[in-house]
Length: 454
Image (cartoon, rainbow, N blue to C red; front, top):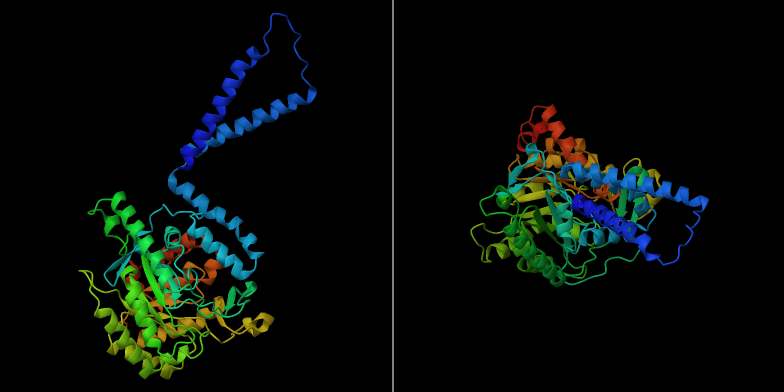
C-alpha cells in the first residue's frame, strides 16, 4: 500500500511538472515580441534545490518500490520508537488514553510478517500464533481490540470490566518509575461498564468475522488459526463493582453478557485497589465463587466449540499456605487456568529508594519479575503442571518471557514494558524468544514449559 501510494505521488508530481512546462511558453504569447525576462541570480539555487529534491524523490520512490512488505513493516515498527520520548513528556494516564485511542483508530503499525513457527502452540483447543499477550488493564473498555491484535500479539485481554460503570479512584492514580522500569497504579477498576463493552465487542466481533471470511477460504490455515472471530485470541477480564456485596453476582453478570465474545474469561480477585477483593482468594471463598461462575457459564447454550475457558488471576503477595489452597481449588474444580500474577503491594529493591514508591497502589514492571516468577514456579509444582498458567509481571525481553515459560508458564503477558517500549518491543521479544528456544534445543514452546521444575 505504501509503495503504491509513493508511486502515485511521484507520478502525479511529474505529470504536473510536464504539463506546466509544456503550456508555460504559450501563456505569454503575443503578436509583439517581448524580451526574455531576466532570471534572478537566486533562482539558479532554487532550480538546483528543485532538481535535488526531484532526485531524492525519484531515488526514494525507486528504492521503496523494491522493498518487500516484511522489510517495510519492520521500518514502521522501528519508527514507533521515535514517538516514545513524546509520550514520556505527558501525564501518565493521559499518555495511556492517547495510546489506546491511537490503536483504536488504526494509527499503529500492522504486523504483516508471520511469527516464527517455533512460537506457535495450541491451548484450550485454540491455536496461538505466539505466546505473547497483552494483559488486562491496558484496554479496559475494549476500545482497540483490532488494532492491538494487529500489532502482533498472540492474544489480547481486555478489562477489568465491571457490571455498572464506575469512575475508579481519584486522579492522579498512575505513577511512573521510569529508571526502575516500573509503574504504580491505583485506578480501582475504572470501567465504562458491561453494556458499553458488550456493544463494542459485538461490533468488533462481527467485523473481524466478516473480514476473516472474505479474506480467506474456510479451509485455509489462517481461517482455522485463532479465536472465535478470526486470527488472534481475545480474553475478557471480569471485575466487581466497589460497592457490590455479592461478588459472585457481578462475575456471573459478566459471564452472561460477555462470554459470547470471549475466547477465554478471567475472574480477577487480585487487584489491590478494590477494598476486600483479595479476600476472595481464600480457599472457601474462592471455591464457592468459582463453582457459581462455572455453573453460570455451563448453563448457557454453546455450540460445538463449547464454553470459553475460565481462569482466575491471583496476586503475587500470597503466603505458601494461600498458594496451596488456591492450587487445591484449581485442581479440584478443573479450573482452566491461572494468571500469575497481578500487581504487588510490596516495594522491592530498587523501588523502595524512589520517593514515588510511597504512593499507594499496585506495582508492576521489572521489580515484580522475580516475585511473580517465584509464585509461578511454586504454582506449577503445586498443580503438577496440570493447569495452563499465564505468566505476567516484569517481562521486558524475550529472555524474560523464556524464563517465565521455563518456570511453568504456557503463555505470557506484557503491560508495563509495552507502555514504555511501544509496538517495537513486540517483534523484538518474539525474535528473542525464538532464539532462546532454538539455543537450548527446544522444538516448541510446550517442550520448554516447566523445564526448570522437572
